[in-house]
Amino acid sequence: MIEVYEQITKLKNTIERFSSFIVTTSSEKDINEILLMSIDACLELTGSDGATIYLKEKIDQEEKLVIRATKNLSVNFEFYLGYTLPISPISLCGYAAVYQKPVVINDTLNLPENHEFRQFKFFDKSLHYITINTITAPIFDFSNNLLGVLQVINKKAKPNIKLDENNAALFTISYTETDIKLILAISSFVGTLLDRAKTYEKIETAVTNTQKMLANMFDSVKKSISVLNDILVSGQQKFIESLQAEKKEKLLALKEGIELFKKQYELSKITETIMSIAYLITKNGDIKVTDVLHEIISTEIRLYDIPVKVNENEYVIFLHNVDIIKARMIAKRIERKVFEKLRLNDVPSSSLKFHWSFYELKPDEEKSIEEILNYLQKIAKESEGEIIT
Image (cartoon, rainbow, N blue to C red; front, side):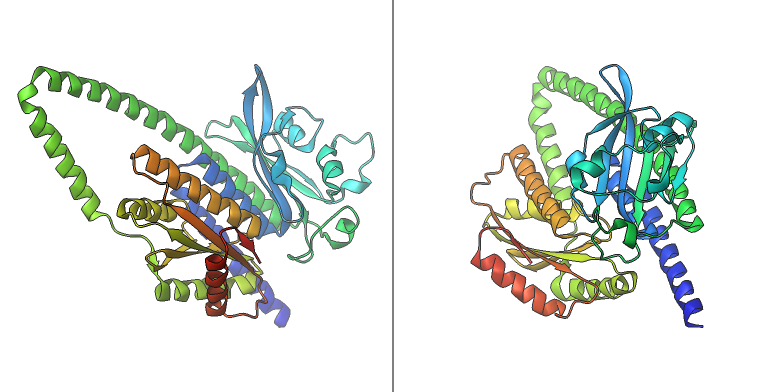
């Protein structure tokens, strides 16, 4: 009876996570974000240690597979972002691309040398890692043209185990039929999203060109009818100001954010999903800088992450299925985007300082959320560098 209940609970969690993936990615237009969300979904839904998406691109007049998104929970595989492989059976992903069919191997160690599947072992050797099993699936567009390859490796017996070349054979388990169906479904959906995103980019380019043409026409009109210039500029400025006045702040209040995160964290305990907290203290007195900061924090995180405003200069970001390394990357991206936006708007930024601290929660975390936030606040105030716990 207990086993049946556990299976039902696991199935329910799988359906909820897959549904969440479909909903969140359906509204995303940025290709990089689509790829990253797909990688996270693959790892969570199949219990894999690593996942990689290769996209077909033309490099030096030759079509190759390029690593455009990857994540491994045991080793730093992101070092190989941008690495290229030929579209040939020299590797499993190359095989899947050439023959345009999925490959499922649950025991790579016992493949004979003359087997049609050939494992590309460069990554394993360079990282002191070993691939025991894999699901490799091609990605197609609407017209059934190859866009790339999705690959997951090493389904783990327990989520928190770190695999290496010495223990991987002991702590990996075979992929199930459900895992295979999930990866095939995700690869198919990713193909649809990529096709749509590329179409959107083309439309956006056309719109941009049209806007430039209209802007040039508008400039000509302004030069020809100088009498209307002040009226047009004034009207345009008032329109922009009215839009800015209607903007709603997307940051949650502290109490509301904590309550929402606690519900999310309780679910993560069941699925054994890691969560991270990023605490930010800024030193700034300019309202324009603050507005830009709020906008970037709200837009540069995923839909299921939770941004919170503690007070005028302090913020908390609750990050779902993100470890310390990824949390630091997100923080750096927020900083970079803020300074880019300030430069674009000609807003001085010399007084703006960022002080971050981070905490990675495990499913068996003993500290309360309030204790962790107090700790992070203290660390951020005491240091100007990043503190990792």
